[in-house]
Length: 569
Image 1 (tube, rainbow, N blue to C red):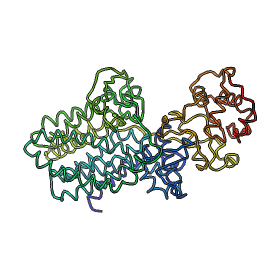
Image 2: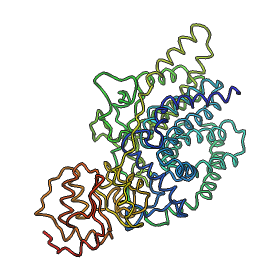
Image 3: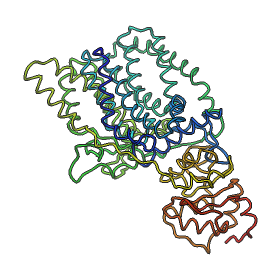
Image 4: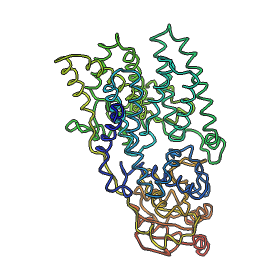
């Protein structure tokens, strides 16, 4: 084996050490938390099912009936879903998801290694930088449920291509632009948010470079302009059909999609490790300070911050890369804090720079906390340069420098990555579930709100044969979760602990909701407040027509809502 091929193999070993515990249960469990990962598993199954039946994988009618969902507006990972469809059909979506999650930091690290190898002379130093990026707290945090963000090969590829275009200039500008266009088109079908984030931070990086090297700005701008023009044209051609579906196709959402000032990095979490770090502070954790666990990877830590500071002071006179990277890391980390400062779990009214970008079209739908993934690319660059300079030393000086670097990086060691078993109520594998008419519209309680993504998995367990009225997705004129109505609001209220007042049920309005939505079957299963929801539906539809396998089921709802007299409260 050539020495150069050894470095990616080492990343494979690291990935297997982190995620290997899923291998014996692959296909029946998934890597990560019992939360957003279920959504990605569902998308993978949905794309494979669409291709198997010859349907458009960019549009689905399986959820948010009687309408549907435009997958281009969601984190659907269409390209990986298409590429891995044979695996999904053969081994199931859980196995496909686990393969993606294992591959995400591995590919990200390899991409970073390739980029850093162009910048630093030492392959070993570049390998360390790739390791720091691909297995950083931010990126490993995203593997807990956000595979589309954890698949972060795109920023290093952009860095590599821009470096080739502006600094090395060994490739023709049109060739660099063409490669960049292919990368953009691919990333658009993996996760568009990463394209937006890379563009925003890339623009800041270009600004820093222009301020630091004004004499070269004009020539670099001309060459970069050619690259971007070719890249944009190539990306538009390659992604023309998906983009046309997204912006001109059906079921397009409107307005702001993500809430502002929510999925942000807490300033305290930059210094205080979360429970996902192997080395933690006794009695203090950043876990409660972030709403979304998968996006709580803001931790850099004091040792790595000191490493950046020392590198800035000692190496900026000899390394243009460090001179550029440290300010970019600072800017990116500041942006990740969101529009207003959050400190120790407390949201303040102190405005931060992101408040300006937060008001721009498209960027308003970017979750700032995820920018920390890009911050780690800058940190990885500084680490690579620092390691390269340490390796140049001799004797004791070399040993001391390498030991200090190793000690600082040891604070980034992750704790064990959780594995979640895939479970579903027995009903969804029963003959009664199999007898639900294909294409029937089904209401399942609990509804698929943030805590109820499991119902998507249950629909997949039943073979995606029928449609659901809700679904955790952005659709036309719909919330992210269930469609608001008298009935769904009442069911959701019960799920969150509201008391059931049978005497105040608006039965007539609830039956109208069922007619309007075209519901053919109602299922209550696996709810934390199942009995109250069953009692509510008995008041609306009468006794259930089937009970078993942990579920209460009402079939032929159209008949049930017409046979019983309306007694609206």
